[in-house]
Length: 157
Image (tube, rainbow, N blue to C red; front, side):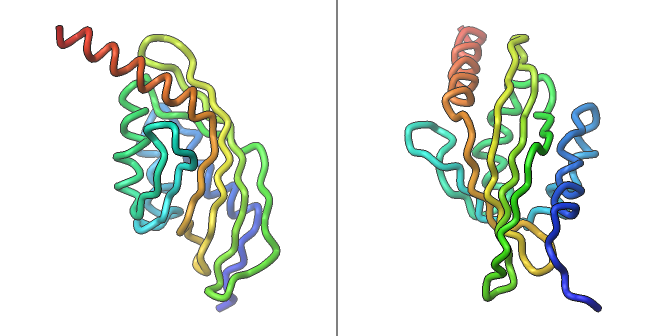
C-alpha cells in the first residue's frame, strides 16, 4: 500500500462538509474523519475569551464552536478560498498546510456573522488533522459573544 501524501485535493475534499448548514449531520465527517479527537487546537491571541490551546476536539468545541453556535441561526458555512502546502515532511511524517476560509452565518438577532479564517493545520501520515492554529477576526467573535451575554441577561430579568 502506498504511503499517504497530503494534497490540495485531499484538503479541499476534507473541508467540503463544513459548507453544509441545513443538516448539521452532514458536517460530521469533518469532525469524525478529518480531525483527530486528540487534536491540539489553538485560537491565537490573548485579549479575547476564545483564546487558548485545547488538547481535544471536544474541549475546543466546548470553548468555541458551541459558544458561538448558540448565538447563530445555523452553523457557520465555511468556504475554502486558498490552500498552501508546506513541502517539508516532518520526522513523524506530518505536513503543515495553511487553509484560508470564509465563514458566513446569521446571528439569532438577524445580524450577519461573516468572518475570514486562516487555519494553520498539521496533518498526520494518515491524512488526519492533529494540530490547528486558528487566526481570525476575534474582535467580531467577541462582539457576538458579548451581545449574547447581554441578551441572556435581559431574558433572565
